[in-house]
Length: 316
Picture 1 (tube, rainbow, N blue to C red):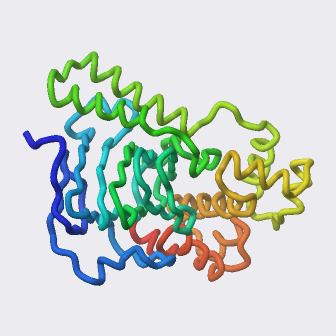
Picture 2: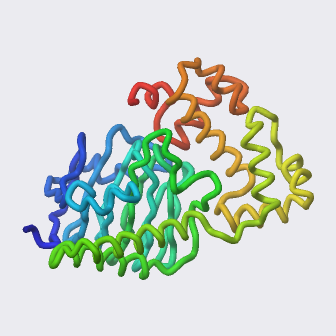
Picture 3: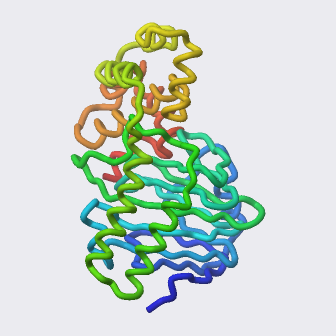
């Protein structure tokens, strides 16, 4: 059996299929791939796995550990990443949660690169571009859970989930370590069950916080039912029965987004759904989600999702 802590040579690899139970890359790095994630645009054409020199990882997949499949978890992992570490997943099949346990790195959230440090948990819904990289100095330790949630499965991470929260990720890290440790040793089915329940329970608590402002939920439920309307900050605040500043603070606290960013996020989610489930033309989809034309939607879609609507539909 491969050691759970794998020394990985500096390199990158393009993925065209599912990862094996333990993934490793050891390919040379060229100048183009070295600068792949430096732009604030999204120049990605394929999934990418690239590791800095000395990167270590422990990864367990549902194909090897069926207990993970009970909650549609496709894989879990912990990575001790070094400068040069990069990951790009263009259209992952399920929700993704990542806790930063040590150091700092960058992640692409809602079309914008953001620095994230220890004490932060980030998450993304299914079929939403994931891209992140280690910082330029020191070690970056992350613990993560990835789900498999094809339509019409209701995803763990949805429009009501925050994109980024301040939270100690060590509990998730310890749970994943315990799960993989049990898998490598006794593989007691009862113990495996309990470890998986803990991992999923922590992920669910992070992605679906219990304390939610009911007024805020009501507002965004109304918006979700009428995305084609010409929503502006003033009209959103009026529906929330508060000032624009109070609404902004409430949205930032719960979603990690401003009100208008949350509106765009929801429109992108619905646009993805319509691209997947209908044969509607782009102009019709644009009208349904509140954009004046297919061209305007396409520009926003590429910025947020990482590819054009046509490319997205072609990849289904």
